[in-house]
Amino acid sequence: MTESRKSNFVFKPVVRGVAIEGNSALFPVGKVYCVGKNYADHAKEMGGKVDKNQPFFFSKPPQAITQSANIPFPTLTDDLHHEVELVVFLKSECSNILPSEASQHIFGYAVGVDLTKRDIQAVAKKTGGPWDLSKGFDNSAPISKIQKKEGLLIEQGEISLRVNGQIRQSSNLSNMAWKIDELISWLSRYITLKPGDIIFTGTPAGVSKLNPNDKIEAEIENIGSLSFKLIG
Ligand code: MG
Image 1 (cartoon, helix red, strand yellow):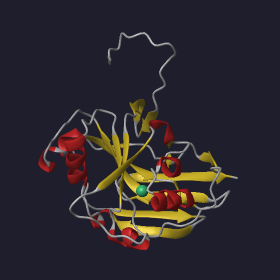
Image 2: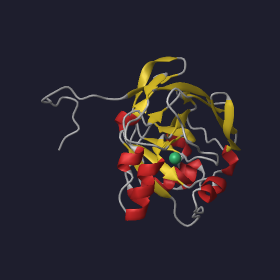
Image 3: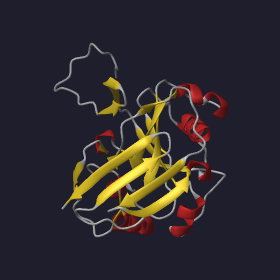
Image 4: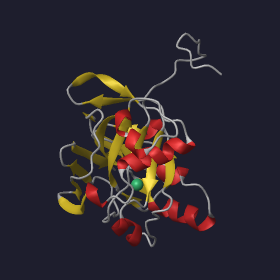
């Protein structure tokens, strides 16, 4: 196995690139992790609670990331949900680091929505099956442009989401049970994190059903905003 840049490939590798505010170069996406149940009020509305002993993670494929303003309404679901989340982008490799060492690996942040097929996820939860098909489908991770904030840990800021102008989610990043430095540190104990890896940091309460042609607007204070339409 080689990661050499000089390798020949049988076809051209496709790298998902994310636009950065004020920069013409793109951020190349590596692994995409998402943390579950990181706000107590959302954990409660899902019938669970935050576990301060152990966070849990799942992944989306990098190809799930999109910055398109028009997203085709996903097929094979009767209960598509929105989850607004702060997304963290990493710029350097780290393994088994302490929370105090995490900030130096941060490249920046964006506003993201973890689109979820709640009906498919409910079946997976019931049968003990994986979440991939409920969380990692095409265009399941819309995100805003990246706000470059190298080495900066963010601990607070308003986070909100509107559907067709109506407020559905409203909270503050300070309500996250597991903070950004703790999430990076925890993940790095299990997996070597690389430049390009990104982390969705969980959603507050208010997740709800989306319909074809809904317009979704999400915002995080000092980070930016994200707007897209689900084309039905
Ligand atoms: Mg989520």
